Length: 149
Image (tube, helix red, strand yellow):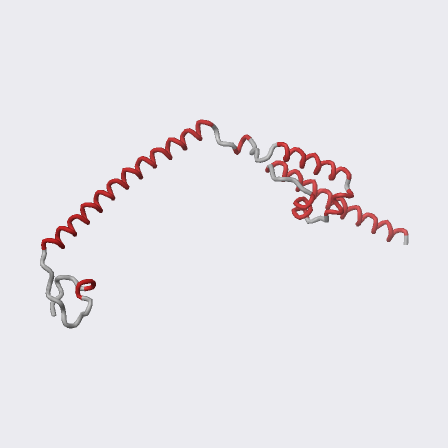
């Protein structure tokens, strides 16, 4: 009987240790990534209950510490993930070149459209309109001048 109780104790301790490791690893990952640390997020990610987290004094202190650290510096990325000044300048230069190119292209397209519309208007004014068709009641709007009846 005592042997059985001891095995149950050992199993419970092993389960507790595994859960503790899972929660600690989750905290380390969240801190490394700069994720916001809350009891809810740690509990969900580590697959443990919030009440269990609150009952673990070391985990509770660490969560509180990380929570306070992330609230004092919101949105700060690790230095390895931040863009350098030179990189941002290069992006700005590239974006400005693209804007200049697109403005030029838009101007060319406007001029091309104006020429096309002008030619179409000139052609419509200089050509006589065809006689109305007996089969098409909307001759002027839907039929071209090359249609014959």
